[in-house]
Image (cartoon, rainbow, N blue to C red; front, top):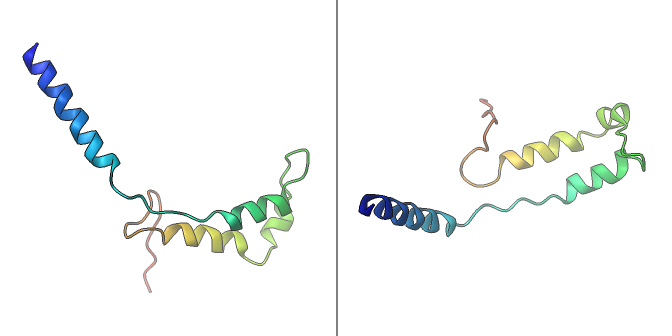
Length: 80
């Protein structure tokens, strides 16, 4: 029983110290603008127009990749 209490205390303190770390912030205004422009009242996406857009969706996704000093999960670093 004493071991269990020790483990719970250890895990709780580790979780508290982790949660106090600052998380990077992401601006989603570009995403909101895209949704308002390419999603209609019936919640249907106009993929043809979105795909032929000015590259704003790609720009938004690229901006997500730049958040913080570590790449987000599932992103690939481009090599020049």
